[in-house]
Length: 70
Image 1 (cartoon, rainbow, N blue to C red):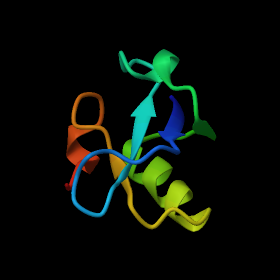
Image 2: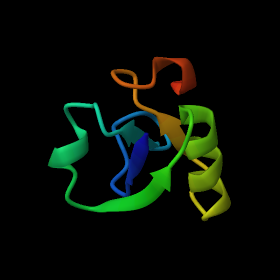
Image 3: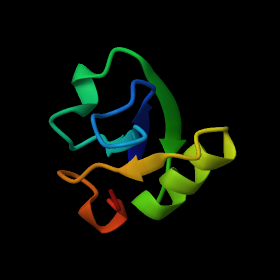
Image 4: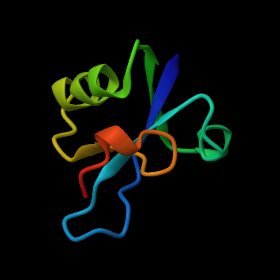
């Protein structure tokens, strides 16, 4: 599945960058995003985002609840 990370932070304290998969209603609405490519699961996509300098990357609570921590 393809993943994108929102470069704009959310409203959580400290601001997280949410990672969305292509089935998410937010995926196509992202304007300022980083394409993370294909991943077999959200854990891999979040790790990729963190390795690219986004330590506050977090799974979307809608499409990747198992990776959503904050």
